[in-house]
Image (cartoon, rainbow, N blue to C red):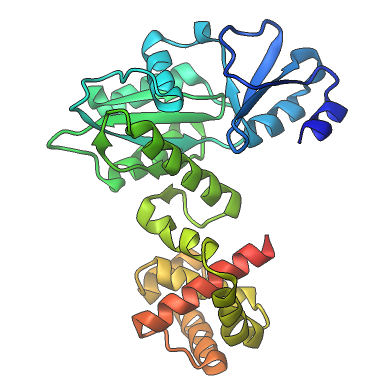
Amino acid sequence: MEKELFSLFPSFQLITEHPAKPAKGFFVFHHAEKECWFKIHKKDVSKRDYNLLTALFTEIKPEADMPSASRKWLAYLEHGGEPAVPAETEIRVIQLSFGEQTIEQKEIQEASCAFFGTSVQLVFSSSHEALLIERKTCTAHEPESFSSYMSALESDFYIKARIYIGKFQRADSRFPAHFATEKEWFRKASANGSAGRIYTMETLFPLHLTDQMPSHMKEVLVKEVLTPLGYDQEILQTVRAFFENGFNASVASKKLYIHRNTLQYRLNKFQEITGISLKDFNGALAAYCASMLAQEHKA
């Protein structure tokens, strides 16, 4: 990575520790996988370069650009600092990714406050990513609330976001590690091009199950499912949509913008070729894992 970045940006400098002070005139980024930081002089970075860098890495902004509460939350979540709430408080983090869209942070902040009230705080972690930090109350927000929130962002600001709804945990010393796992799951889902825009642990579990599957088990799926199908993406996409929509043919066909009869034809063809019934949960699970594996192969 270092050689490639240095060849593209002459001012590239690798940093082994989180920068204590803002680097004037530089963009600073965090490479999560290698747990290192680097900086590049702003004069070397075009708008296109900046969009690409922020899509691949987390930008570290000068603390002066952030409200003190946001700085405290990021210090806690990313570096194990003191929690911004009493340790007995249960919180969850809802991650938002705006892709490469240009956003007005102040407007999004105001809209979020109006939508959620005081139980949820919005913290921008980079120019393209934000965190909704929710304290657990007797009226915790349901996934439908976040779906409505995303619809509001789209209608009011023409912003299409993806979100990962985290799980409630105590805001103690273990929470940053819990958040790091959820952050990695969200990153992998975005990189994999997973369907939908709202993710949870439950919806992404099959993706990670397939990813961690031993090679000999993957070979079984390739031999028994993918090779007979000829990696037919149309059929595999249909199987995936059928599974992800609770085996509801009507909903799945609407999501795929196809007639219900077309969906049924593809599912029947899948069973005819592979001998696996999608009416049985075990068969459907094997088929779904195969569709996920095909997605990995395609990528």
